[in-house]
Image (cartoon, rainbow, N blue to C red; front, top):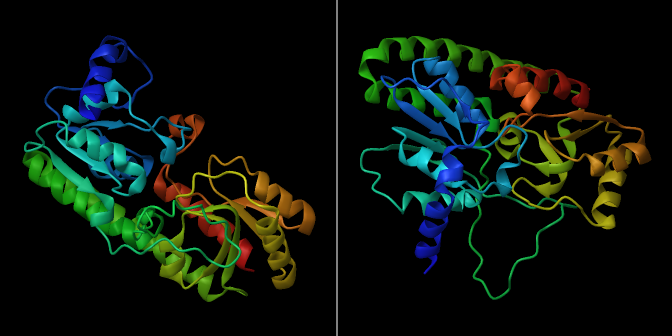
Length: 316
C-alpha cells in the first residue's frame, strides 16, 4: 500500500513538477553525463572536479534544511535520469532509499558519502539535549552523518567521486584527474591550517549554542566540545537546564566565542551570549548555503577557510 501511494503521488504531481522552476543545476547538455547530489558539499566537490563537463544538479534548495528535506516528484525523476547519484547515507536520507528501491539502478553509479570514510556513532556529551526515544523500539546505533566536515574526510570523498567520474566519462578522465589533484592540494592546505590553529591554541574546547555537526572535525584535530543538540537533531528549542549548563561552562572556562551553524535561528547562541558577554560566530558545516551565497559562488574551500579564522578566535 505504501508503494502504491508513493507512485500515485508521483503520477498526480508529475505535470506540475516538470514545469517547476528554480532548479539548482548547470545548463543541461545532452552529451554530458548527469550528476545529482542531495546536499551542497558533494555538489561543490563535483564542481571542483568536473567544472562544466557534467550536467550537475543539487536536490536541496539553497537555504533549505537538509534534515527535514522531502523530495518532489520532479526530484525523483531527476534521480531516475541521473548517471551518477551522490547522497549522504544516514538516517535523514531514508527517503533516498525509498526512491532507489522504486526503480532499476543497475545503470546508475551511486556514491554514499558515509561509505567513503570511517564513520563514528553520534554521541551525547554532558549537558546536551537528548531527543526522546520510543521505549517500544529497540535502540540501534546512530552514526554521525556529517562526514565531510573534516577536510581529511573531504579528501577521501573527493577521490571517490573523481574515480567514479573518470570511469563513467573516460574522454574527460585526464581533466578530472588534473582538477582533483589541484583541489586535494587545497584541502591538504586547509587541513594544515586547522592543525596550526589548534597547535597554537590557548584552549582545546569549543561551544555551540546549536546542533553540533562537527564530530569528525573535532576528532581530527583533538578538540572537545559542548553543544545544545547532537548533529542530526531536528529540535530548535532546548530546555532551560541545557542553556544554563552551557552558560555556566562558558563562564567557568572563560570561553570567548559561542558558535552557531549556517541557516540556524541562532536563538540559543543569542541567549548564551547575552548572559555571558561571549561573541557569537558562525562555524559553517557546509551542508547547505543561502540562496545569496549559492548565487555568489560560495564553496567548501572558501567557507572552511573562514572557519579557520573563526576557530582561531574561539580558541585564543
